[in-house]
Amino acid sequence: MIDKNKILEAYNFRHACKIFDETKEIPKEDMDFLLETFRLSPSSFGMEPWRLIVITDPELKRKLKPHCWNQAQITTCSHLVVVVAKTALVQDDVYIAKMFARRPLKEEEKRSYVQKFKEYMKENVMGLIVKQMYKSGIKKLPVYEWASKQNYIATANMATSAAMIGIDSCFIEGFKKEKVEDILEIDRKLEDVSVLLPLGYRLNEPREKFRLPLEEIVRFS
Image (cartoon, rainbow, N blue to C red; front, side, top):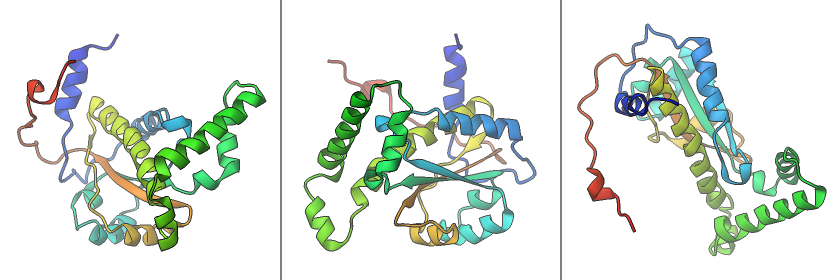
């Protein structure tokens, strides 16, 4: 059993690192460990609507930086993880069948799960505004929002795992999405960038962490 205090230490260690020590590089075995924690994370219906681009090339980081509000994390981090949401999977019957085929289910049960997934996406993700969105040509937004939620679960797991082994991180949502996608040659018919996670080692000690007390945010019923 892991010591609960060690886990809380990791949460207190983790902060939005604003600048990393450019002289320090994350060892391959640690990076492989972090990527594995992402891979093992849960997702709705087990669809894993994600793909990762891990950037270490300094020149590519420099190209991205102006389109990420010129934030220092982009170029000073050891590894820049770009989390890409798979937004075309709702229409991809081959992908859906592949994901459910991994489960030890009878064919009839697999077909039932596939049907439930499609119904869920239609009723709960696409929602009541889907007809208006199709008329305007904006077809993917509800799926992008759903996929991004799944992406954030896995990204948060990776960030926490990083803190547990002394590696810093910072969630980056401040970026010009289409510019970043153009540089990374993302096919927007199939995918969208949802979040960036720079990883590395802090250059400076963080400021004091402030959080609301439990009694202000928790209600027991």
